[in-house]
Length: 467
View 1: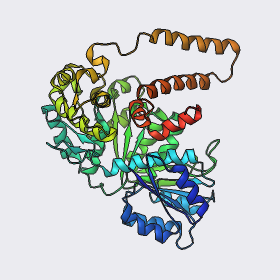
View 2 (view 1 turned 120 degrees about the horizontal axis):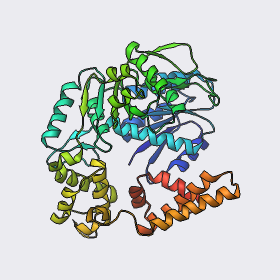
View 3 (view 1 turned 120 degrees about the vertical axis):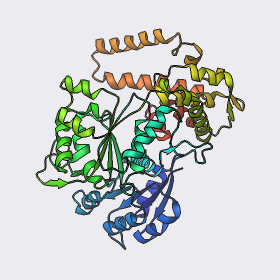
View 4 (view 1 turned 180 degrees about the horizontal axis):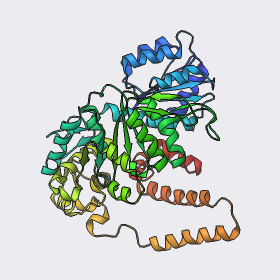
């Protein structure tokens, strides 16, 4: 369970954050001074720190500098009552994760904390190669001994120490992020920050700001200066996932940074130096996108200083037994189950499936099987119906879609101004009711099946007034 430390001299703030953030997902610790907080860091095995800028004994920068000496990869979220404070901005330049203004919005803080803990996991937990008997099921593993995977291991070993950009290609679900993390952990920058950003998950209008930051007043809503990922990851590694979804103007700015190692914040005029190793990944054909004018040819050549192309799971089916066993062990730990083996007939079904979703689809199938199993063995009837020749959607799906279509039509005819929210709420309510009913209200299992955190699940339930 992740450990979070709140360092703030105001008792009311410490209490409200401890109560507001305490869930089954996180364990919250508190300290009332900078020195007390620093003394706790070596003891608590922390995953994130929430640090007040103004403390009675030490300045925020002093505490942050000492945290970096103790653990340079520990994410620190600053909170301050002073929106123009130079201290917070300076700490961001030195590698702080983010800063928020008081009074702190708990929902925003939870989201920021989730991202910080995920970054901590990615930078601390190595993407280790598969062992005969893995010791730590918390570790994400690159699993497989097929000839195709042996080539991947050799490529990682060949280029990890070389300070060049690497382009990782492969279909969705093949493990591109794991390869990026393996390159980072075996690189000369392994003691510096590793940051990841999914270019497809952020709207174009916000991606440039996320990467390069912005100055106050750069656009409507830019009420404070923001430090971007390239500035934050100085001397570290930045992983740009789904880079094929990046807009052409942002591509031009990334190209300039790679060529000159300098950039300007959005709306700014100061040239900032940034020494960052860039790892990029995509499931698209960048060559085809270049030919279609949707990706810059010069950026493509700049990124593919070295290319690692991951094979789809259907081309390395001999790795399926090892992968399935690894995912069984991981699912046992996460779901608190004791499924000790995969039955031969169930393994046969796993090996015969075509796996269009690749390793990620296999992981979800095994996790579903572990969740459904009632004995010590994962049997075929516990696997998803799609692996047993059954349709993925229930027969009632057609009528459900007609109902949804009718709902949208009725809202349009009524002139409703808030159609999107109403439809999404209805879909969320139906989805959550169905999944929670399936697992008898167990929120841990429901969040696993939905693929969202328990914090997000609880927030959705609260928004829908669902108990």
